[in-house]
Image (spheres, rainbow, N blue to C red):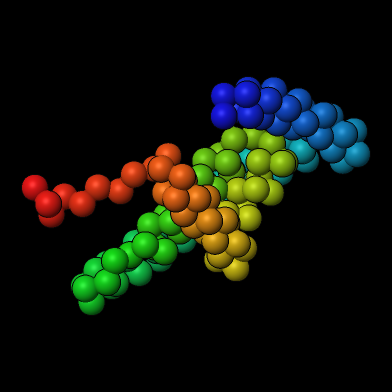
Length: 133
């Protein structure tokens, strides 16, 4: 896991810098910077709107006696997407918008469910029953 994180911390910034240079050469440095600012502001607004929507959905589910499992996973995706959009760069913006839009967030939520399920099955992630105490 540490190796993957190290590779990501080296590869992603390198790709972002390369793409900044290419886009800057194509459209100029001022539009490139303005586009980065616009995606940051727009992403923050979208993250806030989607976060409030998911929060209301979780409240509704809990008031009906349901566990808000999907709403919690959506909240995690929205938080991660918002952080990625606040990070300057085009690749991180694409991934951030992918996590924020409800239609594509479903894919990320399903992948997150599969990952969590596998971690639980292999014993790397434990769920405790606090009702036993």
